[in-house]
Length: 246
Ligand code: ADP
Ligand code: MG
Image (cartoon, rainbow, N blue to C red; front, side):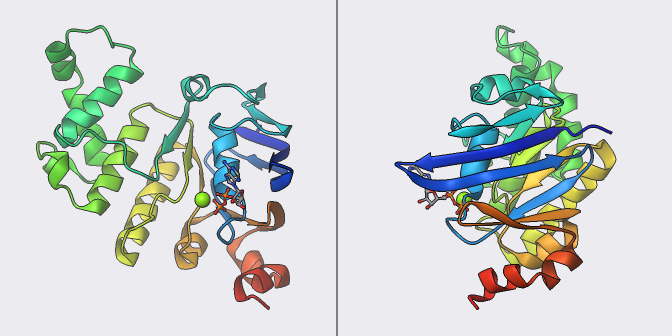
């Protein structure tokens, strides 16, 4: 099996300061991988380089074997890389279903479709995605009245409307209550299993990470200091030092 994502010696410096230093890893099909580390460790910088938002100072990124280093976000998105945003990117004045329908129109490149027609066309597909994230009963509610946790689930449905093979989630549960966090990651894990997609995510709640991630990488001051299963990471002395400040 060849990796969906291959990262080789990725580095980024800002004004001579290394935010990410020589990071290498593979993400396999169907793998749910966590990138953890203290604030300022370089997690978002990594994500931004993978999504094309930021050009690496050095190193290479490959998607299914194809070099994509430095390509703009739109090109990377077109290659089947989905993402969720830390700040929700929904249209507040539209309903839940309409937001997913908009995403589907964009995915199917029906931007020039007569809008009411396209809406109807993608209604069923939107409802199926909402069903998947457990929001079918909220399809016709306005986004402006959604609870924060529901907005995050909607965001996941929007990301999935693009049928990504790889999903990048930088702190998908930021701002959520602990119970909601666990539920969103459970949902993500189910989707990974059912659809065989690969996910790279960051998360502060270690219980959530240890419960759901198949594989965990620990970043500290831009460098990967450990990688392994939950049991291996829990037992790792360097990781304990970073997190316990010892
Ligand atoms: P994390 O997501 O793990 O909290 P970040 O990737 O956001 O960490 O930040 C890593 C380091 O890079 C921090 O020291 C941060 O201040 C620095 N940094 C991030 N983005 C920029 C930028 N655009 N310009 C300068 N420094 C940056
Ligand atoms: Mg961050």
